[in-house]
Image (cartoon, rainbow, N blue to C red; front, side):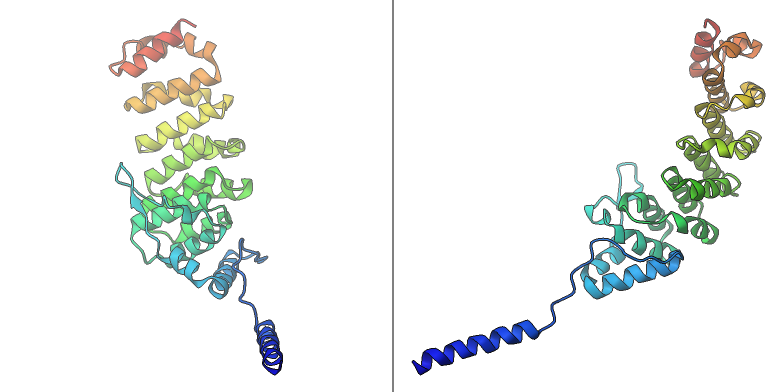
Length: 270
């Protein structure tokens, strides 16, 4: 009887001890920082993850991109589909100590994390020296909130690297508010590099900016075939009847580029 009572007492003591021990902090599922400064928000998120799930933080800090079939670095693991990954990746980008290919992959992955990142893009653009990374940063403007995206793409359209200017123009075409970028897109039609000229022409057509028909018509005689092609396509999207009446289009029916010749012949019979 005494032995039974002693066993019960020991069990009660153990239960009390377990009840008094603090439970481990649950791993946070989503960031809960309310800071309006992106650097403060990022640090608060990282601190929270360090306190609750340091292994998860270590994984996000060390994860590296794999190479795609095209040879480009890209994060494909499901671990990046984590709102906290946005804050960790922003921190890694701001440090700028990793290779440019890794930084470009970090930037490209930001929208896929499901976290908050767009308010940091302008600052990151200003501090980034590699054109490939800036190109990846402006590409995220396709999905960023309106006010932040317009500011980001406006900056990108005047970037010193033609790849960034071209990607900014392409990103503008994916946005319903892309018309707000009409002025810098039109300015890009005079760019010294063909890629931004072609991208700007295409985007103005996709956005259906009717007021730029004169500028696009000038590009029908551009020395670069891609620019001529995109200008012709854009005019066809804006005003097919105008295209059919243009004397340049009749001449383009015999363009040495078969893509242009086919499109010009089709446009002339509308």
